[in-house]
Amino acid sequence: LAAAMGAVQRAGLSSVLVGNAAQAVRLAELVATLRGQGCNRVEARTDLSLRDFIRALAAAPLVVTTESAAAHLATALDRPVVAIVGGGHFGQFAPWRRSALCCS
Image 1 (cartoon, rainbow, N blue to C red):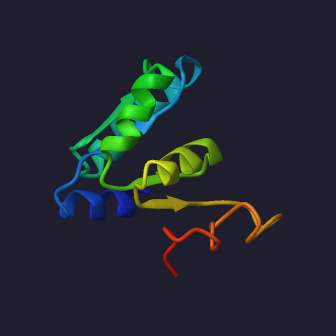
Image 2 (spheres, one colour):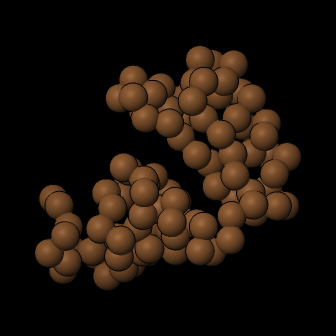
């Protein structure tokens, strides 16, 4: 994770880790760990409403997620997405090869 975050920062981007209130402590620990490894432009948000979350996705230059709702929303908003998905239904639900927006 730190290597990926470092690459994001070298590209001049900031990172926002999004979760719910129950994940606040874990996300704060993760941010502290990443900052300790030199990833200074990272923050955690656990206070976003659905509307705020969608606005954040719409403004993101890149969305990296393991959560399918975020992947679907970002795709619908025409944002570049890296989605880490299981292999159970490859091609049916992701990577959206039937979409004109999909890249190979």
